Amino acid sequence: MTINNERVYDVIVHMDEDGTWAEVPAMQGLYAQGEGFYGAVASVQEAVENYLQTSDEVSISENVEREELERNLGPNEHLATIVFDMAKFKKRNSKAVRKNVTVPGYLVEIAKENGDSLSEILAHALEQKYRLI
Image 1 (tube, one colour):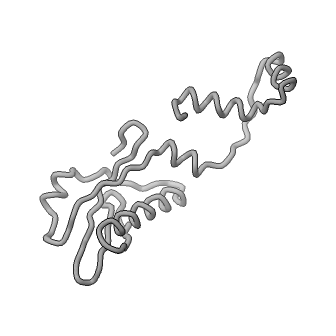
Image 2 (image 1 turned 45 degrees about the vertical axis):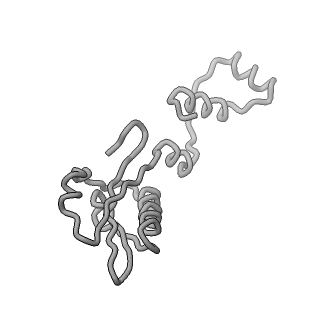
């Protein structure tokens, strides 16, 4: 589920005599182990971040309704939620892209006189426009 710029995932944490592991039902096949409940949640959050970083096409099914997940929990299973701020995630994991833009000449001259980078100014302006800073 996406709220504003946050992506929210439910996590099922399985705890038994063999250890603790977690899964994200919306990402079929994504599992992670951890030391105890919080360790498993932290591990699966890292696994989700790695998945998002390395996947060209993110294959994510719709989250199963939380109430349905709660109804189907076994005796050694617990429900948790992880949240990703996608704007911060994208910023941290993006590469520079070369773009040709047209800028009025007088603005280029002013920037040059002040030793400013047009790329830096444009990036800052876009972040402001989309309320990312």
